[in-house]
Length: 118
Length: 113
Image 1 (cartoon, chains in turn yellow, cyan):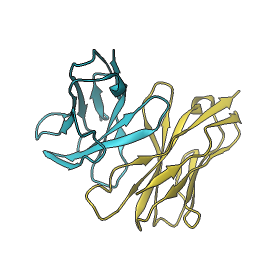
Image 2 (cartoon, rainbow over the protein chains, first blue to last red):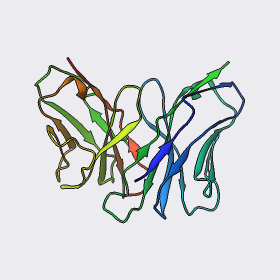
Image 3 (cartoon, rainbow over the protein chains, first blue to last red):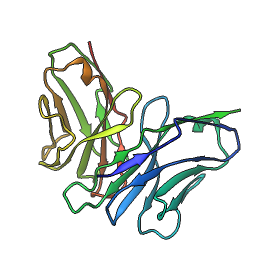
Image 4 (cartoon, rainbow over the protein chains, first blue to last red):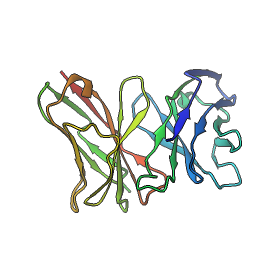
């Protein structure tokens, strides 16, 4: 079974500063994928960034980067130069390759609410 | 290039009625996933389908819930005899193949009175 843990229920950051959202995971799979999604107050789920377990370099997408530390089983999201529009709920998620038929399904953490102050 | 479409966006049902939620995946995507988000919680996997096949329904409640993805038309999540505990946001996601990034629809907010 896979498990995602997000220990920060809420985070605050000043506009234009960087912020790190924590995510740790637990899995017995050798191959897996790690994802971050943003859910603004409007409710939609927006894909932000993906990291494969065999990727040697940390993933980056614009102001988002994923700090992947495989030995520590952590996949923290770093948002640089925060903007007011970054205020939202952020979910860490993972898929696995358990050798079964459903390694595509996502397991989500509980989420972190990020508030960006002007 | 339309994204994942879900309708209706909001659905109100009385206890005992049926709810039908529709999902049209992105063009070229043949893998569909349904997730449920209860208030103040993260998303929980319900079912994974490919065209005409249910691949994994391990997250579906054993009774009253069913899903299909016919050869033609959208995927349907059907909830029979709804109860208040079914009130939640139901999200559909699609991907071109399993293991790749899933793109979510806007969700259907179901409210059971």
